[in-house]
Length: 395
Image (cartoon, rainbow, N blue to C red):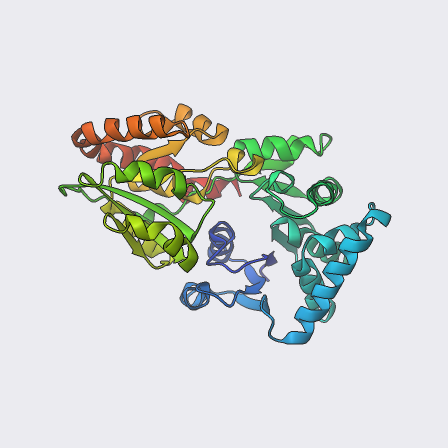
């Protein structure tokens, strides 16, 4: 009888490629797998249907929208109420979890109504940690927690002090309950494990956000213009485009930029539209389609703006996707990206986040584009070390 694994996400597989890779690996390894996540009610819905079509697992989705109304309404009330009373119950685990996210409430409620049996739970994102912990305790089974972001270091708009305290409390309280902890970048691991100094280091491991090598192809590019690419789930403000696009415009006769993702109309109208003569915008693609398409380009933009501590210490999916495609990486100087390119020389350059540095780096790239293109295959081969096939062996 195969062991039965449960994966829990605050999203779906389309918007959480890290969990998607782990889940597929578990299925391939012969485990019986259940997934509990959210139906997002957005652009990812159709891609999700295609994503799960050929995966031999059971998928269960809780609505993240206002339909059905009652669960959304009740969970919203509980979230707001627990936020109001938080200062009176700072050491109450449920109060901390429910005031963090209504999805903690919805996940917990989902499992209360189910008679389930599992051998292992794998939970991604802080808002899933509490319901995953409660279920693991109820079933007396081990729990693996994945830290893809350092949540206390994220930008928080409302009641910053309380929210940061809640996140730190949840991590300090629940992480030690895990049988194993995985994390998504060296610095995210360093910051997170500082919160639980007594946790055994041998029960933690770095799992990089790499992709399967089968999703990439090598393709030469001999176009007249230097082809830049940037992708994200959403094309919106606050992601670094405001800094780099004006610098790119100065070279618009020599370059073209492709943006791939869900375009926010207000961001287009207020910013991108005036640069439309050298920018192409493409709709979101499935992970495999996106990774294959990247081979068409020369330069991958990893322009993290350093908007908060988490952003400076994270390594995004895109920096690995660019590397695995053989693209030359144009990266801003966050500590995480600095460290990555110091350890992997000749696959890209680091630029400071000011106009002079952007422009000088772009001039350097345009001047050296023939060498950059000539060395693309060498980068493609070098970056096979980052493949998910290698990374998953750690699991």
